[in-house]
Length: 207
Image (cartoon, helix red, strand yellow):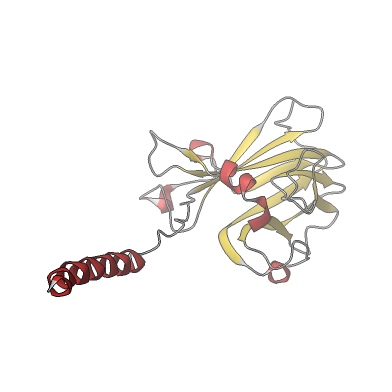
């Protein structure tokens, strides 16, 4: 008699625990939300100069200007051509932002540096840009294996030349070294393209 009286409550309790546990297992695991990147800035300063020139690049798919055809290279400080002096060296820092909300601009650079093992910045230099090189700077970020992130670089020029450079932020690269974008594998978080013009005599911005 007593066994029959207690069977139903115990069974109900067991079913409740089972249902609760199953419902918890079915809850979706929160995804690691990717950061939105809308703007990349290169800050360029000639070695020995205190002046910094900023070059801003809107990330494709996040155009800030509804009238793109009316925008020129110097509009609002934006540039697609970088002029450098021959036989010179420049310190270049890359900064990555989400400026979707102008009142709350997020500096994504800090997150990329924190996740340096999962990221790689790569500059692809076209063949016509001869005598021009981009190397990791002495204050560049290093990952846990000592590989440079290339968020801080030194650009060196020799003679007059001009050509295109493409900058990439690569997520989870399969290799940390290479000569082409394909060599690194992984996924492209953003891609920016600009022209470099190296001249022997021009009115320098870097004074």
